[in-house]
Image (tube, rainbow, N blue to C red):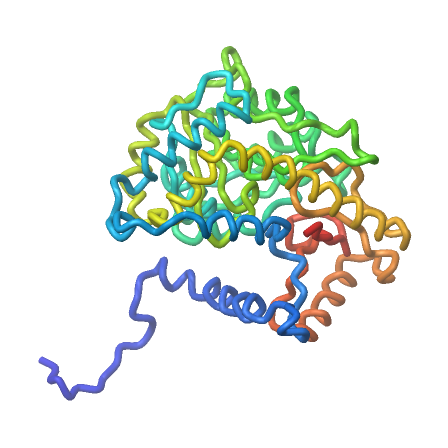
Length: 409
């Protein structure tokens, strides 16, 4: 028997295998926090100008003024009625989807779960639809946050799908579905996810993905966080309009139980820090019950719940916000591509959604290999801190070199 004075300490870690597996990821988050805590402002002129975070600051002043008019009620200090979002918020969200997403079947509040951010929603979906070491198929280039969303707790693998040899396949085309098929055959039997980033899919392409998922009985998770900030510009008047998976007639295409829709407050409502994400699953009540059983770990705060509800119910401000936000993003897009055009920097044309432009800086930087791109980024990282806050191609899962996302806002 050991005494209270026994100083013998067992070797090795003193926590779980899964906890130990996340130590390195925790170190990465600490490095990122150092950069995010030192961003450029007028009061901090030596801070880092971040091009790697998908935030829209174009409406922060108006939103702050609008939200400041909402009084804090005594009821907000209580737990509230449901850990998956109040009935008031879920009803307001159902109205939003029915008014702006043209659903084939009306969305009902009972088909909605609210959580503390879209990352929390992806984690919940991963937990409910896949076992540890199963995989989600996601096309390149992709949002790097999916790595943490899928792996950190649920231990689900991200399986990035390349756009053919040296990126020869248009990632938005129906031909990309064959790339998913090849990746699936290479990986073996995994549960799959199909999602996209920034550019918008055509109806024909979405239906091709649905048939692919039906064939293999994969879950199809439609990430539509950039649904409302779509915009026309003088150079992209013929770009693909936004099409929601909610709007499609699924009969003859796929079992509707496999269809899930992800949404959030961060992108469409310029409120990343409020941490509010949404899951809609219209035909899989059992999966939603499974998610509700663990929703307590991702409970959206009462204040955020009410603020978003209030904004959504103010139809006049909502309509103004959506329209004006699109206008400001369009102006930002024109400003960025004009800057690129003046300097002869190539970029992907036709963007009409989201906050970024995919640009190729390889020529102006004198870089033509992946190794050169990595060396340049390493030198830049050493100059500005432990973590570079530029979203680059190698980190976005792209097959290209020295390409970056230029931020619009």
